[in-house]
Structure formats: structure tokens, C-alpha cells
Image (cartoon, one colour):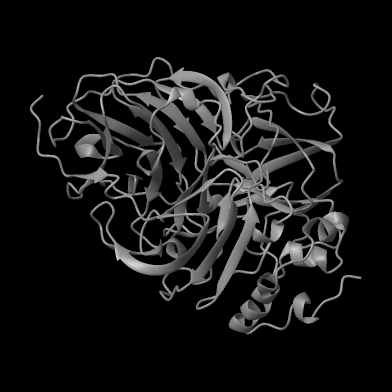
Length: 528
């Protein structure tokens, strides 16, 4: 569920010679672009995006995966085919369409054991859904996997009210950012992994590695470009900037914002921004910088970098110098362009439903209200459709919160312990010491901060079904940092209507693959 209305309060203690360029011109490195009717194959392959060869989980043989595009109002039919066979990595899969509200199609959300059973090898699942009135920058990915399987998804709006601000908005202006590890994800579980590199459009370099190719973003003098920044990292948040250029923010997580000029953005895992870049500087090459929050991160030898190349500039690495930001993005300065305002009474604690979640950590295990999330063996949606309607009946115990329909929910999340800042994502749907109910930013991923800080968000329960709320640092999710918000379970069957037969078959196929007894779908359980 995309959060249609969101208020964020993050409160502390509530309180000069050119060298030969090893670069790859973009969009020449851009994967194939798919429309809203597509088949994508999840398989294995060996790649070296930063010069280090390793096996990976790929979409149609590439990382990042193909860009998926649509026009506002299009219906999506995307078949996900599982051809995974490398048992050093995960062989089960599912694909989540991040930021798509899935109103009435909760079964297509793509969240293993919350909305579906995973797709087993040599099987597929057709995700059929409408994005309704949504337009903007989204992405798709699997949960629990940092071996690949990530790609951008863009829904274009022919009537974009901010179209007057830019001249170019196409595949060449979609910019992906992703941390990259040299060890397969299963070996890094329940540790504190550190990425070896930061990839921009799928290319990068690592410390001590070769001068491998860097991505190049080509521009023409005088033109204005809508750059769609998609942060696909498993963990790292980054500081993004382009030497010598300001950037005007016009979108956050698929929702337009009032234009805001900045010279640097901190972008957390799973967040997206659209920024307008005006190519108004002298013809030259300029460093594009994406510095992760890892210890000793640097731009030495082109690490954490790409190249902005003006037409007419030589094919050489930039010589531009990194300068201290004087106008970084402050998230509280972002305001919704259309229909600003948070729902409900504009006062803390005066929503219809007021939830408090306290996040703690012991060792490497996270707890939300003293419960660590462990995936149930039966998807929460299947439990609901089989008759389980109360929190006391729904698994996993203590991790499912049942919410009444058509209520304003205010959720306060307090963080204790290490590991932050935590980017929190609510499926289906900033530094300040005061609350903003008048014109808060709306988005589907927001930082909950670190120890001693808290986040406050609001939304309306107008999308019946179970929705995952979790930290989008994949390692923290794997270590239990998640809950499920079950909106009006008694209405879910009627809200979804006829559930596709292909969805019904996922659990029996999965159970057979795992050698498990039959699930609810095969008459194995009865909640009535």
C-alpha cells in the first residue's frame, strides 16, 4: 500500500590533465525496455559490474534488470518466470512492485509469505494489476536477496503538471544506484555485511580493483533533463550530487513535490527522486557522485562515481573537484504538490487509530514490540481468505496488527539500539522537532532514524488486505525487523474479488517442492 498521506517527524530524544576514460556510454548500457505487458525471467549468471566476477541473480540476464515502462492508466500483465538453479543463492523467488498501491490486487504485491507463496524453480506467476491513478518512479525487487533481481519501473504521465520544467525524460535519464557485494547473500545472513562497491547504472569500481568501466550520462548543452534516481541498495544510504550543477527535486517516491532546488540529496535504500538537471555549464565531463555511508568511503580512482558528459566533451574522466554542499536536501522542506495535508485531526495522538512500535535489537536480532518477525509457513493473505480474521488467529503471532477499515492511522516508531538510520517501507501505500500536518511530504519509504529518534506517519485504511511494513535494509528485514498491517480482514475477500487460479496454485506447488504437508489451499487447515 502506498502511503497516500504521510507526516514525518524524526525527533532526537523527543526531542588537471585528462586521463583516458574507462567508461561506458549510457544509454548504450541500458538493458532492454519492457512495456506493461511482459515476461521477465529470473535466472543465474556470472557478472563483473565493478570488475570482480561473481555469480548473481539476474533478470533477463542483466543487472539491473530491464526498465519496465507504462503510461498512466495502463494495465500491467507481467509474468515472472523462475529459472534459478545456482544453489549457492536463493532458488525461490517473488517480485514486489515497489510503490504500486495494488488496491484490490493485494495478491499481486509479490511478498513471499505475506501475500503469496514463493515461485519455485521452473514455474511462473502472472502479476496482473492496475496502477490506477499512479504515475512516477517505482522499482521492482525480491525480498531477502542482495544478489541482484532489481530494476526500475516508470509510469509516465502525459499530463504531468511539471512537464514544463524539463525537455528529456526517457530511458537514458533513469539512474539506478545500488550497493554491491562480492559474496553471495546467503553467506552474509545474520552478519553485518559491508558492500564492496556502489554501482551507478550497474557499473562501478572497488578498492584495490581494476579501473573498470563507469557509466556515462550524456547530455546536450542547454537542455533540461528529468533524472529519475532509483536507490536499489540492500543497505547503504548515499549522498548524491553532480559536480557544478544544482538539482531541482520534483518527485519523491512516485508523488510530485513542489519544486525544490538543492545541490545534494541523501537517498536511503528504496527511495526514489526525480530531479531536473539543466545542462547549463561549459562543455566538459563532470563527476556524478554517490557516496555510501560505509566507513572510509571515498571517490578515489573513480569509486562511487559515474560521468556526466556534455556533447562535444572528450571521452576522458572528469577533473572536476568535489566541493562541500551548501544547499543539501532537507526532507522537511519537501511538500506535496497536489492535495497537501495529512488526514485526520491535525494534532499528535488524535488519529482514529494510534499505534506505537518500539524497535529494539539484541545481538543481530531485531524486535518490534518485543517480537521478532519470522515468516509464517502459510501466507497471511491465504490465512485471511481461509477464515482467520483476528490478530489472535493470524500468524506470525505478535507480528500482525489488525486495523479497521476507513480509519486514519497514526503510527509512531521509536528506535533503540544500533543499526540505523532505518528506511521504513509500508507496502500498498526528516529531521524536525515539530510536526507538520499541513503539507508534509508523502512517500512510501521514510527514515525512522537511529537510536533515540522516532518517526510518525499517517495513512488511511482504504485498501483491505495484509501489507508488509519493514526496514528496507535487507539484512535487518532478514533479522526480524518487520510487521504486517492487516487492513480490515473481514472485507478482504470482497475487496479482492476473484483471486487468480495461478495464485491459488503457488502454495501447493511450493509445498510439493519443499516436501511439506498440504496448506489451507489444499484443505490442510481450517480457521473457522
